[in-house]
Each structure stands twice: as structure tokens, then as C-alpha cells.
Image (tube, rainbow, N blue to C red):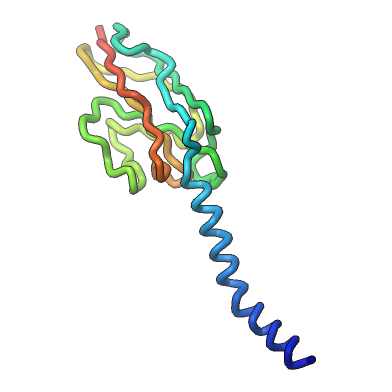
Length: 148
């Protein structure tokens, strides 16, 4: 009986790291998957709207929640605003922070934007705790605004 218990104990010790890794992978998978019914959208301005050079962009999200970057929580993400981006970045990697891809890792849901006169496009992408879009990326419709 002692040998069986020792064997079981030794087996449990050897399997423990594997079980922990599997649990972490399962949690990571859940964090990286977005709900199918999730909708990401720009509340304002509206598509085709004329706006002043400095204007407010309000972000909308339904079906998931907002969490700051670095906070690993299931069914959450944070916003990234793409301005005048013609070609979508690689959505399997962390979104780069550029003058055209703005991160809102603090969980912000709106921002002030200043753009030169002319037509500009705006689009949102939801990123996980590490700025990586979810496995089934949540991307808003691209809108166009005309800056006066």
C-alpha cells in the first residue's frame, strides 16, 4: 500500500506542472476568444459627418467588457483606433503603436482627435490584454469623416 501511495504521489508531482500549464492554456484561450455576438462600433461621429479639426470620437462595444491592457480577464478587451489605415495590420500579433494606430490601454471609451482638413477614415479594433486582437477579431465598420 505504501508503494502505491508513493507511486501515486510521485505521479501527481510529475503531472502537476502539466495540469497547471493546461489550466493556464485553457484560461489564455478563453481570454483570447471573443464572443460571437460582440459588436464594436463608433458611436460618434457618424459615417460621412463633417467635423471640426478637433473632435471627439466615442467608442461603442456590446457583448464584451472593457479591461485595461495588462489585465488578463475573459470576455474583455480594450480599444485601438485606426486613423487613415488602408491595409489592416497583422491581426495575429500585437497591434503596433503608431501615429495611425492609437492604443487605449487604460480602458478609455472616447478620445479627442485633431486632423487636417479633408477626408479621413476611422476604425476600431479590440485587443486583448497584450494588444493582440482576439482569435476571431472584433473590428468595427470603417467610417469616413470630412474635416472642415
